[in-house]
Length: 416
Image (cartoon, rainbow, N blue to C red; front, top):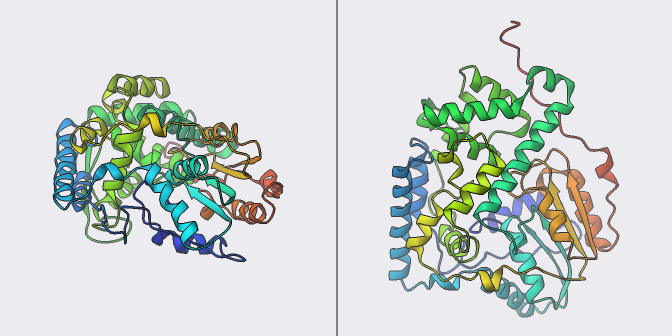
């Protein structure tokens, strides 16, 4: 069960194969309703083009928000004119599709693996359709009962603080980059007050593009792990000393999206019916202030990775489904719960939180890994393989010897 919501499940197959998921068992991958290769496909080229242009705009400026809302409205109008019922694209229906697939394939029991939004979906599926599920593995956990816009700030804080704490624990990193939390706060405040406009070449190649770095852009690049975690202390130090290159290149990567690949329509139908309702803009801002009290309110008013979502949901206009969807899953089906300590999208503590009502679960935290753990961690891969063979007693011994990789250490400009 892929993430997003709206990700390309078929595109995940190489990562799953490289992770050995199908080494001694069949791997079944299904495009979620509305995703790429489904009919209808809820792609929004209008939103893709907005994001391509947005790298040259202030991340959290009201004018940027208006452009995003306009793109979402154009997509919604086109989809509904084609007869698409956007209210039918939700996690309840999504889970029912997987239950139907098992029956259609005449499979008595199968194992379920989901990551990111796919964990929200997997837990919903386990709650509503437990029959035929031998085991469930969830990676980078989004508990259905708590996911909301304010929740994103909690995860952002946990993941970023974990990177800083890991640097503090490595003497070379600690000595070279002291007080990273203060450095980050200073740079967010500085960029929000005086955004940088630079030219940067996208990492994937192509012509250089104009990039704007404001405080919101900086925070969201960190949450998205757009700069590898091992480079984050160096990138922040360089930024503080007038060199924004690492962050600028990471931002420039968004200038060349694959138009029509991501199903933004599924994203918005799920987010606007299940994640946004029930929490006001003031609730979101208050959560941001708790997480990062030194950041400007203009940054904290936008949920990480979901900017201007209240405004987008006003035009997307789907029914509130929180009463149906914000439910805790209680199950004795064997479960594996995997989190990465550097995950700033779905903080590691939420794996343990979800496991509290899964009494036959094994919870694993992989140090130094960000979002979507299994493809990045040979240890997590071996644990998943062991779990699929022995769901109630997987071998987790490899975790004990793990530590975050050494951070990038650049020459000290002052001593040089």
